[in-house]
Each structure stands twice: as structure tokens, then as C-alpha cells.
Length: 127
Image 1 (tube, rainbow, N blue to C red):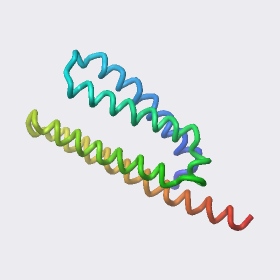
Image 2 (tube, helix red, strand yellow; image 1 turned 45 degrees about the horizontal axis):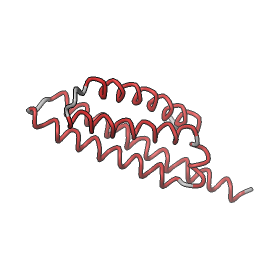
Image 3 (tube, rainbow, N blue to C red; image 1 turned 135 degrees about the horizontal axis):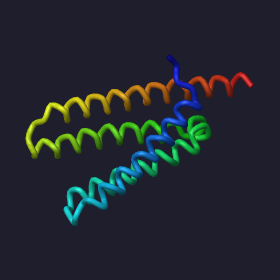
């Protein structure tokens, strides 16, 4: 199944809304714990960035595809870092599965962003 510009746009918007809600809930439950506070703020930042990408997806795909790619790569790094921090609480198989799924989804998105960017550039050259 090939993703379209519209489907990825919707994905980024939906994920950002869910992320904003989750980050705000995490910030509310942080109870002045610095690690939870920082994690919540970083998650909120990623969520707002995803919302921006979703709203301006078509334009960014043509003019600044590297920005989208860099955000996805940064998200992968963030997932890996939060996984490493969670290991301080002990190894949990569920966390490994969660990290694996998150990285695979982000890799899939990255591949589709690169493909769509090339397709849109080639269409623009034909016109």
C-alpha cells in the first residue's frame, strides 16, 4: 500500500493531537519530577512540530523535505534515548517492543516522505 500526501498529512495531524494530549497529561502528572517534566516538554515540542508538519505537509514536501526527514530522525533518536532512560527502572520486554514498533513506524514514514518528495519534484519538472 502506497501512502499518499493526504494520508501522511492526516497521520501527522492525528499523531500530533494525540501527542499533545499525552504530553499535557504527563506534565500534569509529573509532580515536579524533573525527568518526567523534561520528557513531557520534549514530547510536547515534538507534537507541536508534527502538527506544523501536518498542516503544511504538501508545501514542506516540495520546498523543505529535509526538515520533515530531520524531524523523523530526531523522533527516532528521542525514542531511543527515552528507552535508555527507562532501562534505569529495569529491563522490560514491553519497552523493547514499544521501541521497535516506534522505530519501524518512523522508518516507514521516512521512506514514504522521501518517495513522495521525489515524485512531487519530478512532477514539478514535467510541468
